[in-house]
Image (cartoon, rainbow, N blue to C red; front, side, top):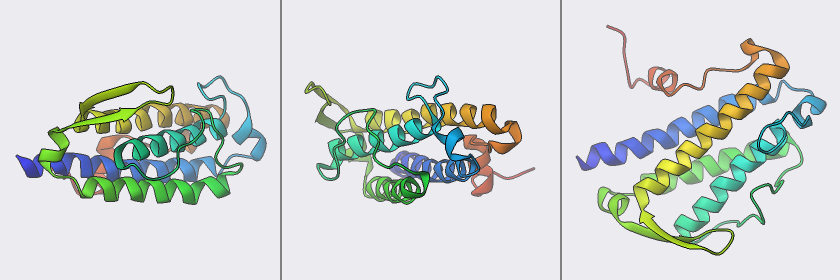
Length: 175
């Protein structure tokens, strides 16, 4: 059972990195004006939303590890260009994967306390925090995917389905 539990989060970390790379590649096809255009997403544009994804991960990793950047707010713009943001995203995905790789089942079911941006303290089971971290990524990647589809057409936005990752990574097979 322990192997199944730890494998789940390692798989989500690998999927997270895979999906982010696919989305960054699609975003690189946008003009600068398209990349920055306010399109009604929670964080306005592809630019704002990709920055928010990195902000969220950095905030959560700081809460989980006690180290790393603590962005000033959820709408902070950490990088002004996609060219600057992409390697930081890749590095953060590697940091998440390394953190998850170090977890065992007992740690995953243990309680973890953290403080939010507004100073509120919460305690919850670590696995449920990680569920949120990975779900948050999926939520906002979906927004970016929709923005790219609207700007460049459906063919320009790659599949980000978990099952597509599972098939590409050998977690499933035909027949």
